[in-house]
Image 1 (cartoon, rainbow, N blue to C red):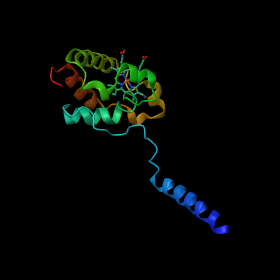
Image 2 (image 1 turned 135 degrees about the horizontal axis):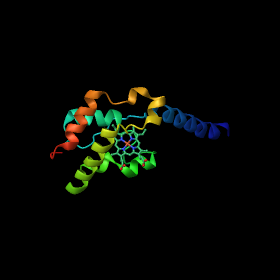
Image 3 (image 1 turned 90 degrees about the vertical axis):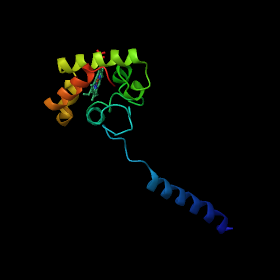
Image 4 (image 1 turned 60 degrees about the horizontal axis):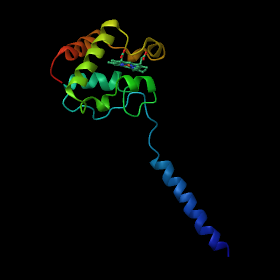
Length: 128
Ligand code: HEC
């Protein structure tokens, strides 16, 4: 009789153990993804590190996601991309992104001057 209970218990323990070892790592702020394959690699690297965390399709930052979703960027129509680049240039010129409030807790998220220049040149260019 005891054996009947033993097996399901073993199965449950096994399942829990399996779950424990396969549980995905908690999502970090700036997770790297395959975004916009046609974007210049140096631009992509900056975006992935400093912008993508808030501006992606699964972002919990609803406001940020609504304003700019990098996952949708490349698939979107030319006119939409140009409009997005215009907005990006604007926030860069004003030093608005990443948001100052966010940088208070995460100063390493700040764009360096070089990164600003790279992103600006890209957002002004006609090419993706
Ligand atoms: C900590 C989260 C966060 C990070 C990091 C971040 N943003 Fe944002 N972004 C937001 C939020 C929130 C908004 C919406 C602001 C609002 O509506 O007031 C926004 C808005 C924007 C907008 C739209 C502005 C407008 O007025 O339409 C652009 C463009 C933008 N971000 C670009 C960037 C770029 C480029 C980077 C990387 C250098 C970046 N963001 C990094 C949170 C973030």
